[in-house]
Length: 238
Image (tube, rainbow, N blue to C red; front, side, top):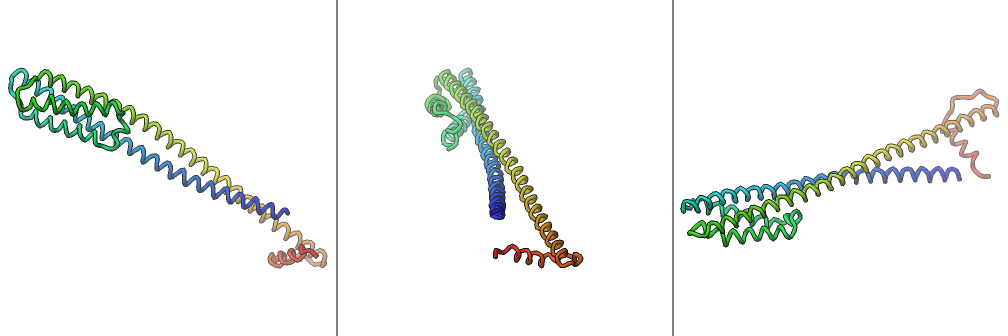
């Protein structure tokens, strides 16, 4: 009964050890996954902010060209080029698949409004005398919309990054815990094996001394294999 109990304890220790190692490896993989997700979030946010920054730069140039045209009546050829570049960036922002993850529906609608104002109020001023003041007001609205989109992107990316860092820390803590548990279980298994071997040697030594006493001989060097064989025979039920 005692031997069966010892075997069950040993099996339980080995099972716990394997489970701890498995969970430790899983925690390590999860840590790497969270780190990759964080890098992806930061790269996507950087792409959006860079596009918005470029768009704001084009909007400032367009505003300057419109101011010059309203005062001198001369249109700079670079006005139309900057209008095209601004529209390209705005259109790209509305088509990127991950932009809705950073920008809510209201800000997405403001990007669509910016494209509409650019096509109906600003682009015509690049070819013919138009109401430059209306075009200037429209470019001001576009600039405000871009500022809101940029702010929303920063806020949301910071929140996602903070959440990812918390997940990374939690996974790392789990990794440390399961690693420490694995070391503890390995130490317990090693101690149990050492104790078992010590008891076996002690039994063999005791049997050898008893055998020498019963035969009236000096205790010869212990033949472990012989002692174990004789111990097994003595323990067999009659």
